[in-house]
Length: 227
Image (cartoon, rainbow, N blue to C red; front, side, top):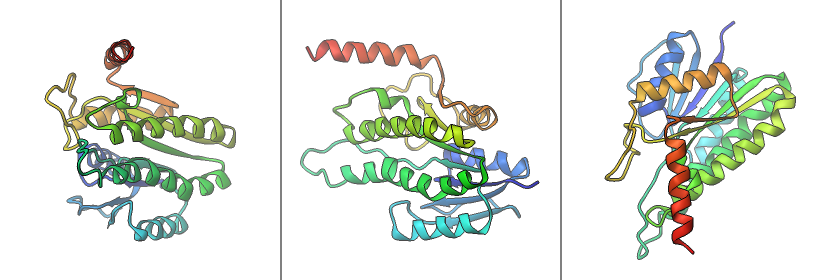
């Protein structure tokens, strides 16, 4: 039986690496990204579309109607440093990283519930636990992202639908910013972690796990500094 996956934001980085893996495993894959994809495969279709555009929802609806979706992974994400003199891009970060993820889930989850099976995965970040003066919109969007998916997972599990929130540290992609990037992993390594999530379907998964105590320590230091 052929399985169908929708991957959003997969033209490069982790999304591209995961797309390659699924195709090799025999999946029918539909990619949606604001950039063209270099992937060419008989089982792959690619749509160039920004997740915040009105056309995005039409593409999603048409894709869901053609064949049941077994897996949907939301990779799309952007981040900008705050410029207090020009905050015009702040809302767009929230729209791409959080609002469009929720709209994507709203498009694919009902069909999964009707069939009593399916898996929705969202790519978050360990930034979801931190407050940032440099990039507040990014950190806030990931905090909302993680909390939403954790709640959605609780709601959908009794219906046979799995939800996984994947929290990455620094991955060698264009989104990685900052002068210090501890425990940077390759996109292939990140794809290994994603494969585990596809197979095991955990509610929450952090990679690499070594960053967990570091994040907790930094959060503690930040809270002490705020007193």
